[in-house]
Image (cartoon, rainbow, N blue to C red; front, side):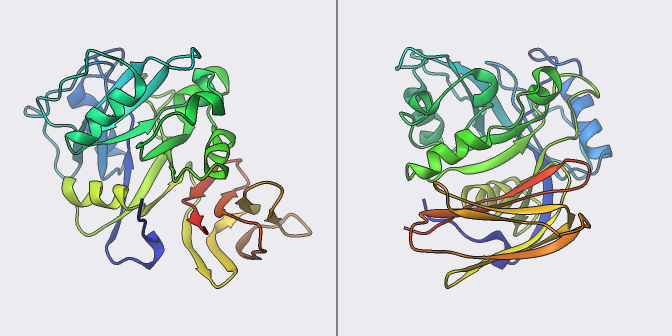
Length: 294
């Protein structure tokens, strides 16, 4: 996987949610209502990802919101562990779900038709690294999921992500709503992509190349790697973490608890990746995608 640094790319920042349910499956809002809700909330794009069914995008109307066709599928686990939830993004209208619901078969089918696959909420699903490391080809993992957080408090899967990164898996981190209800689990987790234009093609290109960060509120202004120095600039937060494999890394916070907006970390010789996450005074976090060092 060849990735770009979103903060070094030209384009415009666009906000979107990549996991959404409607009355096509188990959501309480129709596709058109969901599109209107997210457009009114200032989002630039939205993926409709109902269980086992593709929403019909033809009748949907939006002034500026770009709608992506997606799906959520429950897939079989070859290890004998819990079944996976997998989100497919940017699927063609005629996408056929493989008869075999084995996870790798489904990931491959999504990639073969030009889409992208995301491993959904592994903390909520109950998966461990044993379950996750056998899957290849996915674009990323949900590092935050609103509905998993608001229902059972298992919304953050950062440890699962780090376990995979430490094993050399080049997976990106997305924050999503997984919206089911009208208000409870909406507008709490999203991605911000650096896209060349406001279009389906440009948004998917940006996602595929890693030109985005994930957030529940804080803004990441820049993250850069120059030599062995990693620098981060953010909106006011209480801490900035430089997360690496093993016991490497660093947390930066002020001595008196006042907000900070920048931090840096010098890498040593053991790190195989480094990623930045920050948390604000309200407890909301944001996650930049990793730099892969080897």
